[in-house]
Image 1 (cartoon, one colour):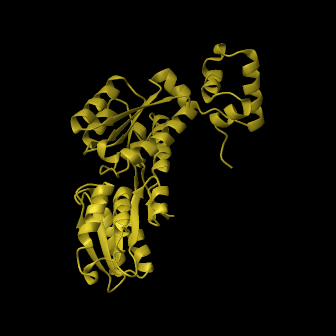
Image 2 (cartoon, one colour):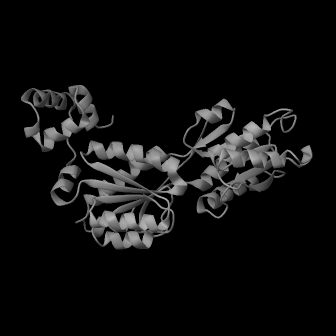
Image 3 (cartoon, rainbow, N blue to C red):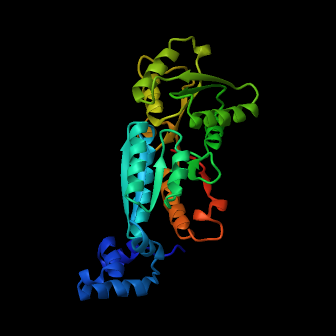
Amino acid sequence: MSQPTIRDVAAAAGVAASTVSNYFNHPEKLANTTQERIQEAIGTLGFVPNNVARMLRTKMNPVIGYITSGSSTAGSLEAARAAERRVEEEGMHLLMAHCGSEERERSYLDLFVQQRVAGIMIAPARGTEEELSRIRDHGIPSVVVTRRATSPVQASVSTDHIAGGRLTAEHLIGEGRRRLGLLANDLDSSEIQDHLRGVMSALAAAPGVALEIIRASDGSSHAGAACADQVMQRPPAEQPDGLICTTGPLALGAARAFNSPPQPINPSGMSIVGYGVTAVSPLAEEHIKAVRLPYFEMGEAAVNILFDQLTHTESEDGPFGASETPQIELSPVIVA
C-alpha cells in the first residue's frame, strides 16, 4: 500500500492541505481544536512527514520552477498538474512560466537562478542542457520533461516514442491495414523522428505493408482536414487505408473530413490513430483510436527526481548524485 500523504491527512481531518502544512511548520497559526483534529488524523493514518520540504525551507527557497515552451503546451500543462500536487504534498510551491520564444525561455532560467528556486523542471523549446549544467553549478538541480536529455548527467523524464511509433503501426497492421500514412506536422523534431523509427521497425516485421509520409502545415484539426481532402482526390487504390496522426487535433480533423458526405474515403473505411493525445474523449466520439502519452506520470516522476537530488547533495556520488542521474522513459498506451 502507498504511504499516506498530506492530502490524505487533510481529508481525514476535514481541513485544507495547506493547513496540515501549517501544523508542521507554523502551528501557532492554528486553533487548538484544529491541531487536535490533525494530530488524530496523523495517528489514525500512520502518516510520517517527509523531511524534504522542511530541509528546503531552512536552506533555500521552497519553490520549484517549471518552464514550458510553445510547442508542448497541452502535455506540459498535464505534467504541471501532477507536479503541483506532489509539490503541495511537501508544503512547497510550483511556479510555472510559459515561453513563446527561446529568448524568453533563457530569461526565465536566469530569473529562477536569481530567485534561488529549489529546483527546475523544463519542457524546453531548444537545447538547454549547457545552461542547465551551469545552473547546477549554482546548486540548483533540474529535470528535462517530455524529451530525453542528451547528457548523461542531466536528469530527464520522457516518452519512449520509438515504442509509441511501433505501437501505432502494429495496431493498424493488426487490423489488416496494408497502406499506412503517417500524418506529421514537424518531421524535423526528435520526437517524430523516433516515432518514425518505431513505425519502420513494425513494418520491417510485416512484409507487404507500405508507408507514406504526409506532411501537414501544423498540428491543428484544420491541417488534418486539409491533408484528408488532398488524399481523397486520389484514386481509391492510391489512398492509405490506415492513418497515424502525430497529434490529436490532426486525427480529429482528418477523421471528420473522411467521414463527411458524400461518402467515406473507401468502402472498407479509414482506420485512424491519434498519437500523443491528452484528451481522449473527442477522438472516441469519432471512433478514433488514441495513444496517450503519460504526461501526468512524467510530472510526478520529475518532482520525485528533484527531491531525490536535493536530499543527496552531500552524497559521495557528488552533486545531486550525478553518477546515477536518472533518465526515465515512460511507455505510451493505446486507449479508446
